[in-house]
Length: 530
Image (cartoon, rainbow, N blue to C red; front, side):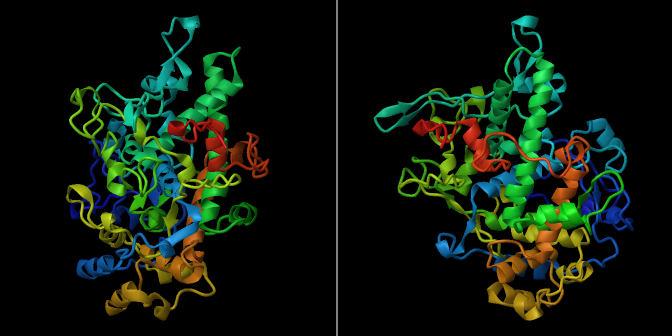
């Protein structure tokens, strides 16, 4: 779901560079086409690799890709017929949070520069919440509260810092300062494990929920134990429940119920490694970019910023009220304020109402509280992502071009390699205005992998779930990332382990269960849980 793209100078091994400037999709190390082309099997290639190393790359001119990208614009973003009632909108941004978790590279700058292709020194992709925990209380002290009186507060305690919001008017009343922002530096930078999670407000509030989840678990464990022991126990509980939730509540919503248990029983067929997981480009540059199709142009964020309220929460506004992309600048903000932004911290009237992003039924979402659905899994992407801010251009074109530059195979070749019994036909791919453009350039027979997966979801699953190619890549990689983590519940307890925190259905754990447990459903409405 990242918005990065390779420039021509980044293609060869000799030109590979490490970017240390913070920025979404730019910092850190990236795979190169030349390196990927050296891979010939399912050994442990390093951080990056291919699931299908023997398939030929698909080459398509930029002009054809641009025309297809232009045809992928959602012409009716407010039409409810394009909504996916199977997937609430919160999962769009949980997916981006997860993307940052599995792609975060905490390797030192020196090691990155010595090994720019991440063959020897790298952090293996994992669902381990490094994006939240950083290097822990010892290595990332700035993320944690001070310890108790036992050490005179000289060392970090087991809990995370939580930031404060700026009071804002609420009609004739005032919304108070609340503990509902990310912790921030004096100049507004988020003090979190992964700066990318402060780029979009929905992702930032998801990260905040994870901080509060950990703190609640610390409270549940209680006193009487050393801070180090509380932290270690809390991190394991949080991480295992998060891993189970991602596999069963997130992945299975995108794919199909039961697919995770099926893979755990029968084994992974295509995402294979000997010892250490890697990031396959068929996943990162192809299948997992499905999230761009799920993005809405407007949201009902809370009772204030909603259609019919002060204004709807547009995608652009969700970027505005952040520290990385927007106008949260700490002490640099004018006092008194001169406008909505710049602002010191998040305004209280921009705290999320989670009832509008996840389904907590029962009880059903009450009247006046709109549940945002994600957009359907199909080839159409909202207009705002076709004109990215800062001159970023068209995200669909960038996705298509990146697939070509990394040498991804066609969707048809991947389907044949998987032995999918009923792959998409050229006529099915040629349907619709986007399909007509694909046919014009021969892409109905040799189709970019990302576009094929979206078209497969549209044609075979009515846009509600992924089809067989997309489902296989997504589910196998996520299961493999958890299974390859020696500290995961799959390694430590096995596939029969079940969550044991309070939940609507005992033995399961969903994102809605996590938010109920945190007891912070809609702070501006003083609703803690449901």
